[in-house]
Length: 153
Image (cartoon, rainbow, N blue to C red; front, side, top):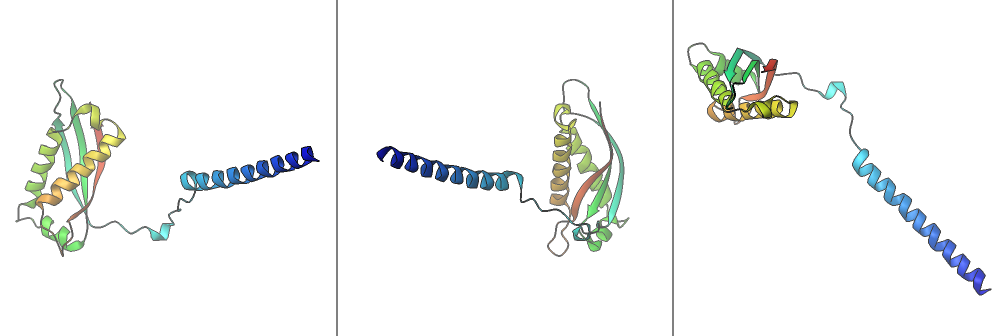
């Protein structure tokens, strides 16, 4: 009888451990692999006003000669910011292009030749441009920096 009781206790402990393991596996699985929301097309906002800055070619900050060539389009946060920056007589376009060139000159080939570096360059450009541009209704002017063309060599 003592042997049957020990077997029953071992079986119950085994079942409890199994249940805890399954529950833990489900929790870990949902936390790391599940629960990601699917973006529905009607939840995506339309892009804001766009301004084509044109093509830029620049050497990079490497000892060896490396070049980046890209075409940049800016997406603005709102129409008022776009209108203010795009006004032909105010000089903002020249200021923006100057800041883009200075930003490109600071880049290194080994960083920007991959997608991660490309995205960091976009973020750097957005940050630097928003730092020098006027705000409209408390919002930064530039929503996104987009590359129409991108080549490093």
